[in-house]
Amino acid sequence: MIARLKKIGFTSKLILSMSLLSISCAKSENTSIDPGLVWPNHGTEEITLQKNMPFPMGAALNVNLLKSNANYRNLVIKEFNSVTAENAMKFAAVHPAKDTYNWSDADYLVDFAIANGKRVHGHTLNWYQSLPDWVNNFQGSTADWENLLKTHIQTVLGHFKGKVVSWDVVNEAIDENGTLRNTIWLQKLGPDYIGRAFQYAHEADPSALLFYNDYGHEYSVTKRTAILKLVSDLKSKGIPIDGIGLQMHTRVTQSDANLASAITTAAATGLKVHISELDISLNPDNVPGASYTVALGEQQAAKYKVIVKAYNSIPKNQQYGITQWNVTDTDSWIPSFYKRADWPLPFDAQYQRKAAYQGILDGIK
Ligand code: G3I
Image (cartoon, rainbow, N blue to C red):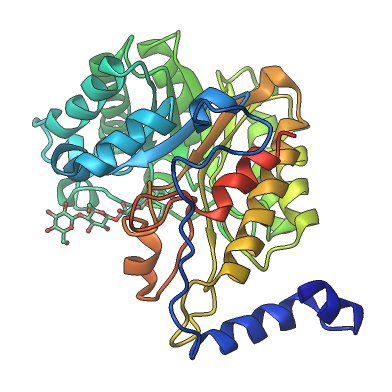
């Protein structure tokens, strides 16, 4: 159907809007894939992401769900070999007051990961969001602010040393226009706070792999160029940076070319590349009454395939892995944050594999 529409000149965007609009009256379709399904040419053993993908496959985890939801927990154990703390390791979570640290949720996640043989990626040491009030209201000299930055980073790295193997050291320091985001850190410490954050982290745990993490590589050449310049400059100055995290919170209408170039241009830096927060929105324009359909699921599968295929084409030693942000459509941050119906992940609200799951597997064929 879609091919025929394309042949008579419909653009894929128009097709997508048509399929979205036509869905308002579509009866709810059974779109789950039987989890026990034996995928073609793989015999009878069940496929899992962690078993069948050639690089680490991760998910950002909600610790409350990990504690309370057996379906959630079992899916994570089964499918992934890398985990990221969605919120439990952020500044406000672990360092709620100047002389108070709270490790409980983060330690729960780390203990779960180690007990189940999973890698832990730390998120995030320095960000302008998720800061506790005591930081946002902190009054002090430049030296006091420097000490605040260093103490936080080195205390957190020290606590997780030997358990958390990599970190998003600095997150989202580049603004949409390609300049340094005017965060409290830039205002108080100047542009070189970024390099010093990496140095403090390296001093505290020399074995940890250190990443710069951001978004926009697939939709903004301005922002991507600025990010790649930042990380290349850090590297050329001898700052201990090992990798770049592409968040890739993207959408089904994003072009294949843009998705692929985001990945290949990042790899051209020579740094490790972590697709760190992958999700593919199916309702980015918040179409009222939208619902998930087989057609949308297939379009999403095709985009996951494009991303995996491009990622699998970069040098093996730069493949740090692909991490999806959250686990299923129902715990994704997108519907609640944007207050819209959406289905961005490879697992549905019933913890079943969607077409997107097969799209990921198809990306390495
Ligand atoms: O824990 C408090 C709770 O005590 C309080 O009652 C509740 C109501 O205000 O808020 C809870 O904290 C919320 C936290 O998530 C934990 O649920 C924060 O308000 C809320 O802002 C926070 O949102 C997270 C957001 O980052 C900001 O930290 C999202 O879950 C998380 O998915 C999102 O993840 C970010 C990455 O870290 C960076 N890249 C973008 C990505 C999506 O925004």
